Image 1 (cartoon, rainbow, N blue to C red):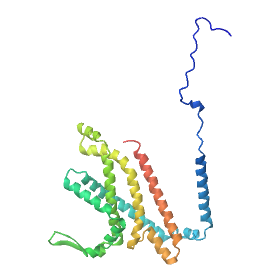
Image 2: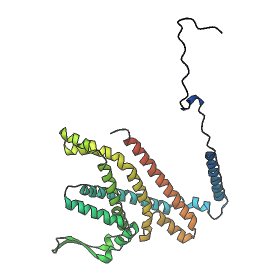
Image 3: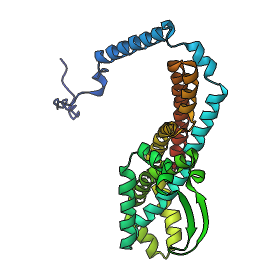
Image 4: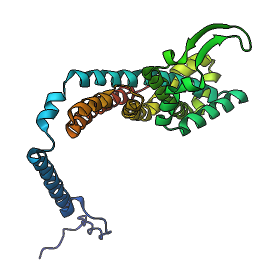
Length: 293
């Protein structure tokens, strides 16, 4: 064995093992339960497909016949219109209630808190029934000076139609949730940024629209989108007050034809389409506002 030459530098001894695994020796972790979960999912999906194809009680031909029928499409348009109107009115009311809730004036804060407590506590079905039967409580609607002459009077039965009652009930039901969603978004903006804008001499209006609102919008969008979807599904309750929405149209058809399940499947399919469209729109808005302030 040859000896190292004089003056040669000796190679350092390998460092002792520290217990940290070498990345080169790592192997993918085996997950046998993942394959089991996939197998169970495939089996359940196959059973569902087999049930749909083999069951005669689903009457898929009837589903296809009424899926684009005129009464169903009319009810679909009514559902979309109700959702849009109640969303706009409820959001506007919610924004006003939110501003009152954040006000420095105690009476406004207490009034906003009472509004939220009352309309969030009453179920939407109860609100719809109450406003639909408002004529029993107030037969004549009038505008005028309190304890003085009235400027105009209208019969409550003529004003409070099923459509009007549905708009009022759904909008009022939506307003407290919108108020709390907007308030949580505005309150989440760091106060230091608002103080910095004020110290730079930025007007309060510019501070709100340039600094506070853009950041709050990113926080408001996800829960607000979920609230709109919940409101869309809540429109199905208006069929109780003799209004022909999507579910009401399906019920009118199956009351005449006695084909209950196929018509309910038609309504289910359209609700799935509407919710999928709203979800896609919500995702697009979230990506749009997540790019920056």
